Structure formats: structure tokens, C-alpha cells
Amino acid sequence: EDKPQDYVTFWKNFGRYIKAGVIDDSQYVAELSELLRFYSSSSGEDYVSLKQYVSRMKKSQNEIFYIVAESRAAADSAPTLEKLKAKGYEVLYLLEPVDEIAIENLGKYKTKRLVTVKKEKEEEEEEEREEEQEVSLKLVNVSREGFKVEEDEEDAKEAKEKLEEEKERLKSV
Image (cartoon, rainbow, N blue to C red):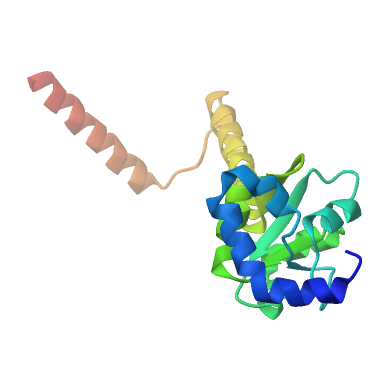
């Protein structure tokens, strides 16, 4: 931290080995996590440490967000990033295959969980599906309270015939 440019040179030469250590050496994961560096949505051309990321987190933010991408440009333009950027959250860019494995192995930094932006989006989609299901359930409840849902007469006749056929089949068993 005293000589950032020297550390960048060190990181470019040995960063992959440090990430491999996070994956392979569970005894020193905490120490090695202090050495990790990534680009982020706020860092521009500079690398950011997990310590720096956490120091810039909003008070309401409980997780460290990251996105897996092929390049910084791809990460910057990812649609899943827009909502977090709008909230002012910084997102780490994992640009090498080993990055994702290292971060998943790390799991958390100090007390902050590491969460992929993709999972954040999946959770939002799940919430939306649950809300849609609630709306559907409300419609069913309304129909049970004496309201009628209009059906196509032909579909209703067909359904009734199938029920009668099934009823007859069951009687013969």
C-alpha cells in the first residue's frame, strides 16, 4: 500500500499464484485475501483490494458484489450491473477464470459475504415470480368467492366431457 505501482508490478507477475493459494491453501486464505486485487466499477484503470472496497461500501450494503466477465468493457456494459450502479454500489470485476473459483472459495471477506451480481438478479427474478404467483392465487381466491371467470364455451364443454369420461373409467375400476 505504500508503493502502489510496485504492488501492481508484483500483482501482474504473481497474482494468479495468490489466487491459486486462496483456492488450494485453506490455512492461509485470510492472509492471502488481503493480497487480492481486482478491477471494479469504480476503480477505472486501477486495481482495488477487498479492504479498499469494504472501506468505500455504503452503510446499508452488507455484501461485496462481483461480476464475472471476459473484459472490463463487457462487465461495464452488463445489464445486470445497472441496478447496483444506480444504487451507488461498487462491483468487483472477475476477468480471469481463476478469479471466480478463488472468490467462491473465499466465500466472505471479514464479515462481508461475496455475492455474484448474477445471483442478485436471480433472487430478484425469484421475488418477481413469487409476486406473480400471489396475484394468481388472489385470482383463484376471488373465483372461489362466487365470482365467475369467463371461459370459452367449447373449452368448458370439452373439459366437462373429459371429466365425465374419467369418472366413468374410475367407476369401472
